[in-house]
Length: 504
Image 1: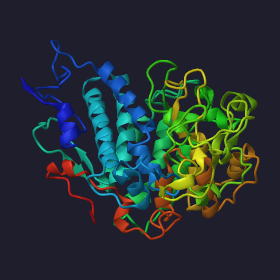
Image 2 (image 1 turned 135 degrees about the vertical axis):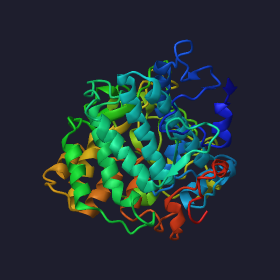
Image 3 (image 1 turned 30 degrees about the horizontal axis):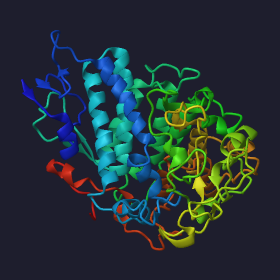
Image 4 (image 1 turned 120 degrees about the horizontal axis):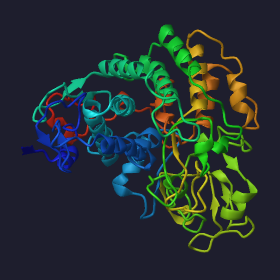
């Protein structure tokens, strides 16, 4: 049998891992799994399905998809701090739209998404009916992110050889395929299990279909940078899929981000973490920006910028959770942090490493130095740290939330879809302690920026609303249209069927 070094191929070419299916290929994967091997060498589809779910943990990392989705926007920045966080300027390049095809986080996202597609394909072609249904949903989710970030989507036809270059869908073709896949499996997926949204389920499929129909005008545009036309029939599809979701909002916004957030009725799909066991990089959500002297200690890196922070009322409960238990354990509210930081208990002020008061300021530059080296920038903690186990915490990483679905419905109606926005905006606002945003496109865009901060949707929203390329605080110029899509990584272009995205 011919051996294919899958790992090497993923890292080198970034395309051999793809496919709609992989039937009857007399190949052997590096780990010994035989594809189409029959009774003497069966494919361990249960293990491969587990790997397909574990692949969702890559969304928890601070690089890869998360960096591309948030760092490229007005919401998140990774400034260089003296000799720290420069990393060959890769974080600053994302924020200022100056990346190139050799950018490490671009390559990492491409390889991660498509290697997970490969695992899903093996299950689709060899698994039981239940396994296949779950794998088709997961594959659709991974493909959705390829469509959104890169436009082009490589795939393999049934029975094609791994020695052949994968074929490539256009953005429009890939969008149609993923919609058809989800519509084919949604009826066969199970209802969401109370207390565990980590398994593919009907609500998650309806959410993803709503997301696809909402963005269809973007994905089908002749020019990725627009203009975009949002068909009323597509917008009505958004409404119908949101209405098909069986869920409710959590009474407390922070129920979605606490260590036992699996109990929130609002989380529609998540990546599961286990306390003290296998986990992803969710601790990055409370370490990436925190100072070394804080509890939990951090890496003193990422921040938000003043123009984004100023969208919020300072007393909006979504950016300030000052529960007494949180203050006792960590000293400071969870959410966006600005001003003097404290030791656990919230009484004793902290100092930076030079003995100066640790006071976070909104003022921020892309390269910091001097007295503000350790303190520039508003810091963020989107998840409540798991005090019982900070290294391998229990917090599940939410990938889809009902409040997002409701705001998608409101937006779709505002764009011409059938239905009434009704009380959506006030329902979202109740738990914030502040008045509702207007039920207009501008109001909905503002509310999405506040409700979904640092959850991985900001780039997608900014593109759909025509804001992504605009000048902003730390990027004082309009970006070239090419930056609406990320480049196809240089190594992936060994596939002759892939063409570099325009402008790169």
